[in-house]
Every structure is written in structure tokens, then in C-alpha cells.
Length: 251
Image (cartoon, rainbow, N blue to C red; front, side):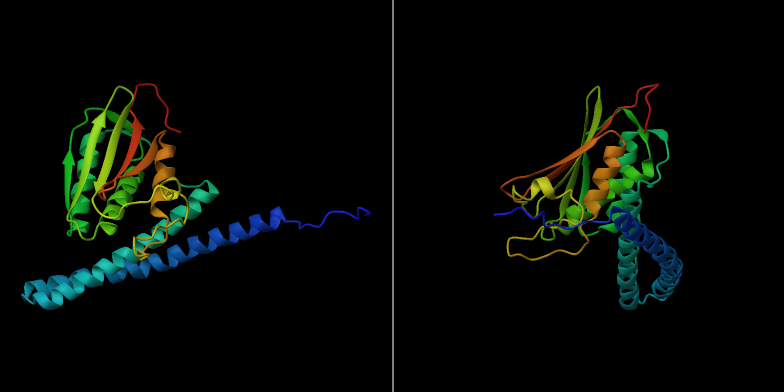
């Protein structure tokens, strides 16, 4: 036999980068184009709901509340796509400040209790330490975990947040009592676009972005996140963030 060469394909790296750039530009442009009408729609719906509540028309007020919830979901999905684009391009902005961790977590829990009225969110434990980083971005990461907990535990009414600390880290665990995650899925659930199915192969709404974005935000703060799922349906997501030490640097 005579060797006549290799058969293969050549990938134009420059072309792939151009495609990624155009995709990021499209997502950014779409975000800006959709943001204004969605904000206006939310304002009008809030005014309409107040009108129905003032006139004690609870039936139509509840319809408007449902519409507001859908607007919030659309806005969250658009923001997640924009964050994903910024993460991929390395341009996700972070602000730096030092703040006490315990009241930060409790503030996020209080906010999300309003957003997720179907579940009772309970905070257990305390921390006394402060951390350095972006409170808004870390709040986003924790909100993603709480939203996921509610989504995958529809038949249960409680979500627990556990706080703990040592000399190096503060830790937060978000615990729900719904869908058990298979062992083979656990290493992949923080991957981009990865989604799991229920026992009957049912799917859940979402793009598979939230956990990926949360992992990237936590890693940016020098922390890490992990997941465990018990045989009785208890699932625990735990992330840790370094305790602030004077002279330390947040990168």
C-alpha cells in the first residue's frame, strides 16, 4: 500500500472568532432593544394591577400579577443570555466592595421570598465574617440557586439556606427536597446549557445557563461550588467564598 496523505478538515480559527463576535454583538443589541419595551410593559402592568387592587377587583388583579411574573421571567432570561455572552468574551463587569456576609444572604432570601411565594425560605446558622467582591453579582448567583431549588421541587414547600464559616471561608448551602439528581449528572450540572430531566424524562423550563453563570461568578470571587443529591430527594448546593482579610485582593 502506498501512503497518499491524511484526510481531514481545517477549521478557520479566525472565522470562528468572527462568528462568536457577531453572536455577542447580536445578543447585546437584542438586550438593549428589548430592555426598554419590557421595562415599559412592566410599569404599565404595575399601574394596572394597582388600579384593580384599589377597586377591589382581585380577579383581574391576579391576572395582571401573572402577566408581571411572565415579564420578569423573560427579563431574567435575556439578562442571563447577556451575562453568558460577557462571560464568554471575558467582559463581565464586577465591582469591588467589602460587606458583611450574613445580612447580605438574609437580604437576598427576603427578596426571593417575594419572588417565590410557593416556597417557604428559611435561613439557618449565622456568619460573622465579611467578604470582598461584587454583592450584586453574588446576589445573582444565590438567586439562581434559589430559583432552581423552587423549580425542581414543585411538590414541596420549603427551601433551606444554611450558613457556616471557618477561619478561611464563609459557606452557603441551598437545600431543596424535590428532584433527585443522578450521580452521572452531578459533575455536569454546572456546564453551559446542560439540563437534567426528571424520573419520567420530563423537562423543566430554562436554558441551562443559571448554574453555569453562578459557578463563574463564584469562581471570580476565589470560591467554588458543589452539589450533592440524597436518595430521599434532598439536594444541596454549597458554595464558599474566602473571608475578607485586610490587604487581600479581589481579581
